[in-house]
Image (cartoon, rainbow, N blue to C red; front, side):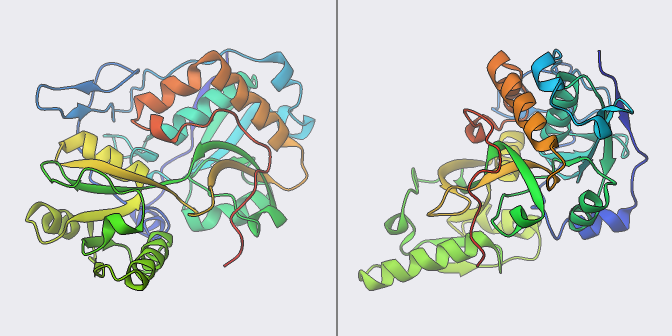
Length: 326
């Protein structure tokens, strides 16, 4: 069976850099003995295993998928995968502050196992993965990378998660759903400046204004703590941002609830994918391996373990349609 190894942790300065590329969220500081679904307390708070001892979902080798691995990658028996461990539940440092854990790590390890390889997980600043893949330093990246048409010029992709943005409200809020522009009319919404979600919200706000509906009140905060305080104190009605991190936070403290999911490329669908060097053939192996994990149920168990079942795909696609260049 394939083994799993880790490169040494990177520095705190690297963590600060990566936070610019990934949505940050609070670390609940919780651990659980089970490696399957997170345990739920009587208060509704879920406990995720953030310890370095991970009871991961194990995957069996798929000979057909393993046969697709290029010899250049297969020869050392390892699959070198870059992850950015700075945003739970995607990837984050464990309680020992050096071991990457999370959904992306679990997917990477399971993918390597199904291809008959050993996962070599390398903590990497999000901004550094493109050069690392092009240079051959990393054979794959699982770091919440959205497929875009521009990126497809340099990289190949095998999708493994839908890119979703989430609207979250205070857990006792009267707001029940946000599905389209009219649902945010007159609402006070916290959103990140210069983000894709801000762009979507601006378009919805313009639509509302044209239809004579109240304007959105945009709110911006420098950190997650200030944003949370604004929502919990009633100064804001909603937050709008990457669903994965918001879902983890909501499950960890039960102070917020999901009221709406929007495609990350609204009105277009956006895909998160394993990213590989253009033309080296590994993306096809990754796609086959991911589809094996989907078919045998391992994939669903991993997403459920980290509270990401709402972002599951029915099948992995090779170089799916990417978001157009803005």
